[in-house]
Image 1 (cartoon, rainbow, N blue to C red):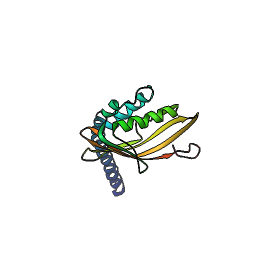
Image 2 (spheres, one colour):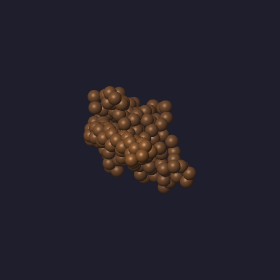
Image 3 (cartoon, rainbow, N blue to C red):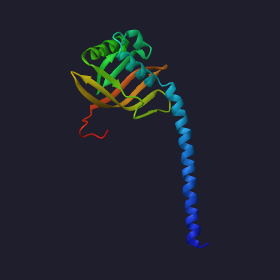
Image 4 (cartoon, one colour):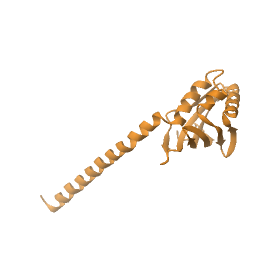
Length: 167
């Protein structure tokens, strides 16, 4: 085997080894993330929220209290929109009254939790129909978690122009 052939074989072996190591690492990272998603308070709340929206009496203080701390804050685009389960229920009942449909699209486009497990970062879409017009928003931000419940939602939400935006 010539020197050039030996280098080629060595390079292929290195590439294969790197790919094998990366696939093993990806599996190690993906497995805890998949397991964590089952116990993810943000995903659990959004699954409930999508269902509750479809029920006339779905948004109650008691229901929000299952997912949010008593002092929870929902901050959208830098503005505090609701504080605590009672305010959250009232806020979303108003949205429910003026819209024909709203859905938080699951699974998220992207989601990860910080090392301490007390912050869940997300990137997702929300679709809605209001006054017969369909809309879509791109939402990014995080939820702070305290004792298994959401204590802060801090999201930035921007409308998506379906005619020109990357989906």
